[in-house]
Length: 80
Image 1 (cartoon, rainbow, N blue to C red):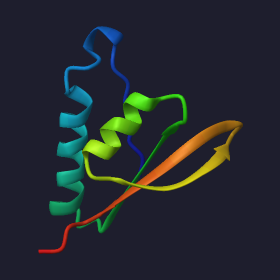
Image 2 (image 1 turned 30 degrees about the vertical axis):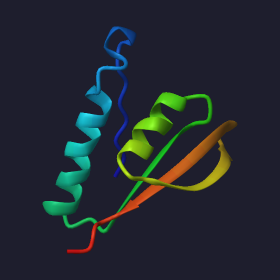
Image 3 (image 1 turned 45 degrees about the vertical axis):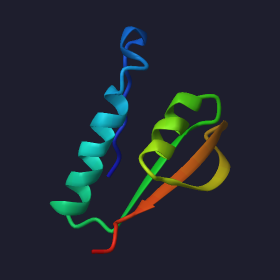
Image 4 (image 1 turned 90 degrees about the vertical axis):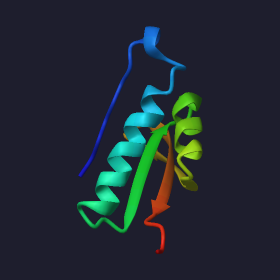
């Protein structure tokens, strides 16, 4: 399963990406029973890095994928 998103620059910095990602993560954990959420972004996309970190995601690794320098993050389902 993969989720990709993009926002028009006129909507950057308003919290939409964080709010949407929070809802998707909550749905994945609570409804789908997913135990681990992975996310990635290109290294230059520091805005997405900040979103992932705001969501509590942790850096996992950096790799070159299809010629792009890519950062990978992860978030395990919280324990009750």
